[in-house]
Every structure is written in C-alpha cells, then in structure tokens.
Image 1 (cartoon, rainbow, N blue to C red):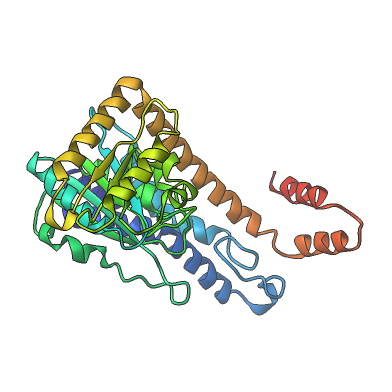
Image 2: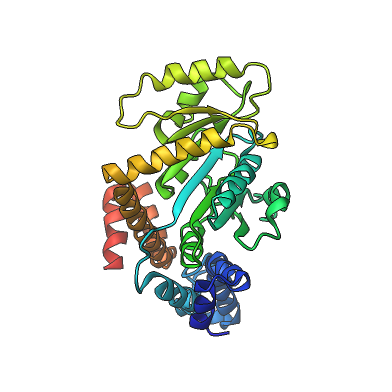
Length: 355
C-alpha cells in the first residue's frame, strides 16, 4: 500500500493503518541498519573498507545510500502527517511514569475508563524494556488493559524501548504524531519502570503523572529520582496498603520546598478498584487549564517540536560521523597517545571533516 494512502486511512481512524504506520516508525532505524549491513556484506572483500569497519547504518564499510533508502518511507510518512491543516484542539498528551511495580499499567487502564466515560478517544503508547541480551521485549503492559481491547475508541500499542534510555522508545515522538493524526483526543504514554535518571517523559508530555506506592522509598528517594522536577501530578497508588499517609506526608513536605507557579497535587488511588479516579481526573483537568491559561501549553509543545527536530538532526550527524570510524580516527588516537595532539584538537579535526 502507498504510504500516503496509509496516512489517509490513519487520518480516518482505521486501526490497521495506524498500527502499520507505527510499525513503520518503529522499524525505521532497524531497517536502515540492516540495509547497511546487507549492502556491506554484498560488497567485494577488496572494497569493503578497513578491517573491522562494520557497524550501524552509515558506518565505514557500509553503503551510505542504504540508510537513506531504508528511511525513505518514514520520511514520506512524517511529511504527510506533519503538514497540512493543524488541529484546532491538539491531543492532550499525559505521561505516566514511576518505579516498577507501582501500578502504572493499572493506573493507565483506570484513566482509559475515565476518559472514555467522557466520550474522548484514547490512544495508549506503553513502552516496555527490551532485553540487553536478545533485544526482545515481553510487551506485557497490554495484558492489564484487556478490558479495552475491543473498544473502537481506544488504540493501545506496546513498544519496545530497543535499548533507548530515558524511559521511552526512540520512536515514541513519531508514534505520538501518528496517534494525533488518527484523531485521538487523549494520548497516554506509559514509560518503562524508571529509576533515578529516566525522566525523558517530562519533555514529551503536556502533563506528567508520577506514580508511587507505599513502602517504595522515602522522600529523599523521591528527590533523588527527580520526581519533584518532572511531576505535574503525584499519585500514591495502592492506597489500601499500610504506610500511605506517611508517603503522602513525606511528599507534601518535599513539594512544600519547591517554589514554582504550579505545585504538584498529591492524589491517592487504588487503581485496581478504580478508587480515586475522579480525584485524579479533576487534578489533570486543573493542570490542563493552568497550561492553557499561562501559555505553558504552547511552550511545552514548541519545546517538544524542537526536541524532535534536534533528535533527528543529531541521529543524522551520528550516522555521518560513523563514516569516520576508520583510518582517520585511528590516526588521531595514535597522535593523542604519542602526545602529538590534544583531545579537543583531535575532535575539531573530525568535526571539520563533516563540513
């Protein structure tokens, strides 16, 4: 099927077309790498470049045109999705993040039900971690959302992080664009179980919901994890367990130290029973109103677009830079070891070759 025809069907909200477009986005980098490796393997041995010069797309020993050819469909799809009349009301993007086991998927399911009661169409991107050994992923978040599998107003897509750090997948911003073009009113993005550095969701979402559970750590751990910096709404899930009030008290003490125009509210929920859903929805609506009234919504969306452009540009630069991973870099390394240059001068030499 023609890419533009696929985009047209996705704009009509056809689930199969939406799924195929997201697959196209997800596989773009992997396809480019495989194309480069295949082209490299097909080249004669005497023209394959320096020994050991295999690598990712665009690396020395590969065909520089192969990655471009593999990503042509992606470029065409993104051009069709990004151009044209902008939506009068952009989709609300709500990110849900937190440590493993706090109930992110169950909370996502609870929010799906709440938004569907309002008549909103909902898209879900659930990012699962991939194995560092096999590259595979269980993609098990959908198991906890089976109640919505047959709802035509809900589109759920699990994505593998594919080794990308930050709690998201590399393709998440582009997949977000696909769901928005498909007419989703609300897009819920569930990150992998995060630790103390994976806060990329805050740069992608309009509202970031940080989920905690009693007994998962004290207020110092919350501060270390950057929660106070990224959270727009704090949720203490599994509130039927012991220690919930202590967790709320610690969070309230920590948020009291932050002087910002928006102070994250703290909501207690029992997502498995649907308890606290109304309170959470009310706080999400308050934050959305704050974003619109303060102009912060446009600032965040502008920052999101800027980050997307920058990420793609840097990926292309890395691909071009990989071509230099041959004799030039080895020679500069030898000069550095021989005290004939310094690392900054060597880096300048590499950068000059890109111009």
